[in-house]
Amino acid sequence: QVQLVESGGGLVQPGGSLRLSCVASGFTFENQFIHWYRQAPGKQRDWVGFISPSGNTNYVDSVKGRFTISRDNAKNTVYLQMNNLKPEDTAVYLCKSSPANAWGRGTQVTVSS
Image (cartoon, rainbow, N blue to C red; front, side):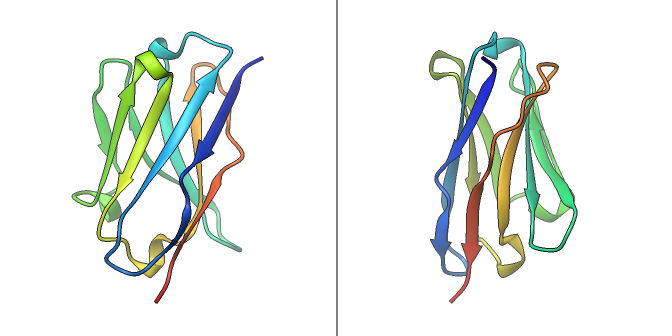
């Protein structure tokens, strides 16, 4: 069964950091692109960034320089390191694999003082 499970979300103050994890199972992880998306209440789901099988990354402009995606193929895990968090980063963060086309259920990130 193809499955992605996110974790690591929580409440953090502006300027703080969090590291999210996306653990995959049920498919050949090292061949997959892994994307991160986020969805704030009442808003559309937005793409945040991705990591390729070879480790190349790309990000939406609003998180460049603050967010970093990495992967550990031995652990079937992709990480989203988020630094200098802002209130506008508050959202449910989800990971997605391609071409396996699986979604996780998401983890809540709240940035508030």
